[in-house]
Length: 56
Image 1 (tube, rainbow, N blue to C red):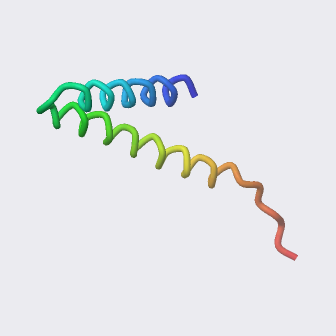
Image 2: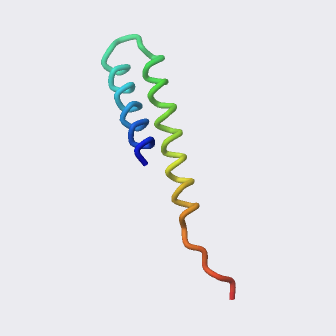
């Protein structure tokens, strides 16, 4: 979970820096890609942790 949060914070920081400085599209994209990857990881992890009910 610490890795998830640290990558999330780094991604948000890169997006903020990329949006603040004119012409740094590469920083913005470098922040958006890890953000999307983190959100996909969070969604996959929530699916994996869902309780499985026994078949009747």
